[in-house]
View 1 (cartoon, rainbow, N blue to C red):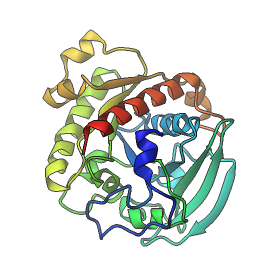
View 2 (cartoon, rainbow, N blue to C red):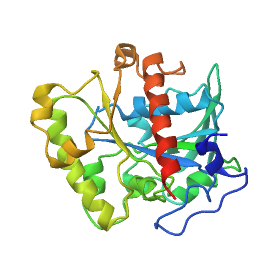
View 3 (cartoon, one colour):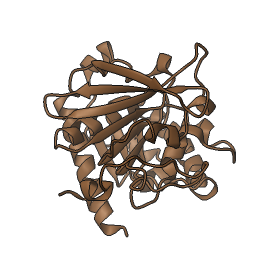
Length: 279
């Protein structure tokens, strides 16, 4: 049995975490949690989250994919063939239960449902609402945070969807998604500056790695303009192929592209190795 599966524990009805504070994903039946954050808009967070979820499901893991974005702006809006019921959330938005069925495996998907008004970060249900939606336990929970990390870390207030990055260090592995361009590097450095401050102020888990969409290595000119934070994290970079088809049609009920799933599987291996080293 894999480390991810071992940490999930038996299936049972989880209890909600204490209000807004750090949480233990294993105690909530979430297994290992991978919050996927974007360095900027259109970085590719939805594709990376989908690739990791599909890769894990293909190995027989019980996978939950949480989509925190406004439903009208979600990159994952079309990935489920089965849309289920909605359950009440503890904030303005409810939680929609859905299912993504793959040739190998199933991914449970949950997303916020608005009330006709635009969903804002403060409307996104807290972690307790997502995990009490049913009694399933999971080996892996992948979260498309879906909001501007720069804005979410701007104050000492509750980080809203970024609360998914406040889980215990042994089971929470945030990933920052960006592009291998000078413009993306500049934006990522600003986000990293605030995120590192959020580790201290908001209890965020340290970033596990970068997921760089497009390309297979860092261009020399891009590496030359990296700031201190990004240069340090660049040593832990996972390169994810860009999908021309998804750029045109978006992410659909079809399995994530083979190259993306291969990158997702590589990320899962790094999680397993890191989890073994942590208490």
